[in-house]
Image (cartoon, rainbow, N blue to C red; front, side, top):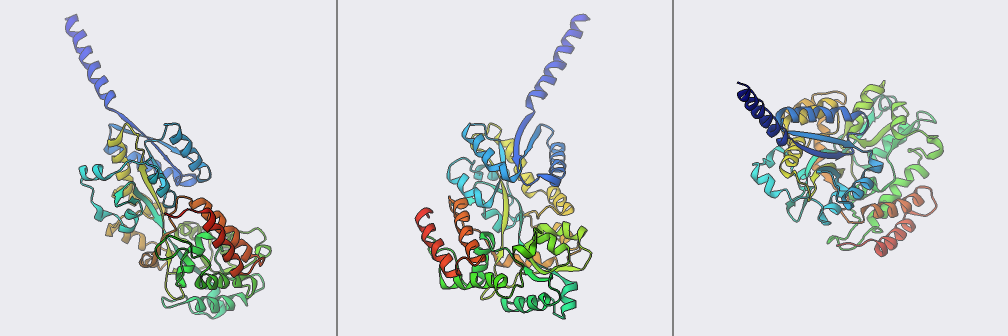
Length: 412
């Protein structure tokens, strides 16, 4: 009897040990859940682990300011997380250096349905037509406007056929309401400039992408238009008039009529604005052009838990459960195409015109993809600042930027 009991205990321990040995841990590092959003990533993890009890996700969240320094250090020390988040701007660098797992085989083995994801978001994480990442989230920029200030100024709300001159005319009438009320706010910096030049038929590069075209007539005209709104018509506040306030603070205070910013502002404005506001597709001049921002998730080429890591990133990218959590939280947009999920998003108010978020996708433009993306941004921002503060004319500033970028930035 004792021998049978010992045998029974041995069998139980063996089974328990076997089950324990099957449990796989996936190290996942990200930046976008930093702050208030960490709770939503934990919700996603809980759902995934309930569906995959043999896989445990070990999440590490690092603030964006420190994220890429830490990630590069881990990769250099052969201690990379199994899966990690990359924004669109940095994805190309990591893919080109061979640090990411090619996902084609995993996607085929798991019968990945590409139709469930936004095509542009999916293509953003390809290199040479191979998939090296999946979209985690995406967002864009719209024109957000204070309906009360438009009403006070007797100006019609932004319409689909608006162009730059319509924006300027409305901004001037709103500016006239009060010495500390402004018509609009749109940062004069790289992330706006690369888009706004395309609204005017310009581009930072030649058509073949092999040379810079920063100081083209279209681009000079664009920068002149942008700085004149501060230095000439003053429909946009200068630094002294801002007095340390950020653009969102200015909008919430009811002191700016139009704000060009991301849809991630919706939850804050919904809770903090005591006036009616709405959105429109950003007007262009010769054409419309709107931002495309996307964060993706990739797998380290050296991971030892490839299958489990892939299940995790596919779940984060394309599952309905994750998409619903994002929609409910207002945490950017899932890159999915599920009609019921997107209908849930558009039914939420404010803003009343949430359809403008998706209309904007007809005009999406992506930031330049070069290996020296950070250096390119820093150089161009320096020259944009010189024009913004009136230290150089737009032509002088862009001539300087053209020269320095050509000398320092390598284009493939």
